[in-house]
Length: 307
Ligand code: RUB
Image (cartoon, rainbow, N blue to C red; front, side, top):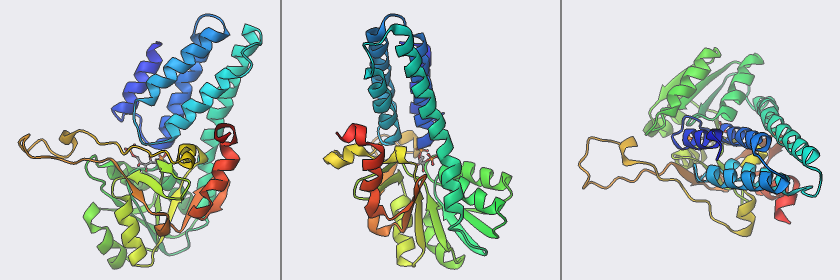
């Protein structure tokens, strides 16, 4: 196994590389190196891609951008195996490169579309550290829209600190609050819209995202606040069409506290499921869709896998 594969696996697992889109791009980049450097004939390259993919797949279980990327690259490696070695490898490397640049291009597309949903005078709230949600807010700010942003601290790993820093650096008027103050913040600060990212969008339109997202959605619904999800199509789950359940990652107790004796149980789930009925719309690179239309994106983007 090439070093890059083990390194990428370890960086995703330890969350040095995190956020669903970043994870997908990092996995594809290391599989491109495997395609270029694996020794042997086409079958050997395909085997190396399959083995590397299976190693990377284990890094984190919930963000479907990771298995989607691996499945797609493994599908590419299966094509044209009967070609001569140079064109086979060349085509594979080119196809992985174009997949990576397509993924990179989705962020500006979504921020452009999402920014149009923010109006002058709006106060918006985001949870965790989603580059997609952050870029929507920053794009609206760059467009000259007068806005204020709130972001949650996001216990236990405080990814909200990163969000606050990124928004501040972009010149956005940002306030950080504790997770348990979301309901009060929505009311007291007259928050108009919530923007969050996605680790998985299911065929039902339900969303899996950082723990606490579902509580934010419930509070938003109770107070009539619009709740938007920024999600590239790489985060839609074709497995959910077949009824497969996405595992919710549980992380180490030490993330929550190392102050308590081991006989005190700790439950530290990293993600939760937001009901599609609490979602106003999902902003994708192909437009804004109601959550109930998730299957349309899945059919369009994952025809190769759904067959
Ligand atoms: C990150 C998280 C983000 C999504 C989307 O969780 O839940 O909202 O991954 O991120 P973690 P992005 O910190 O555990 O990886 O929009 O950047 O793809």
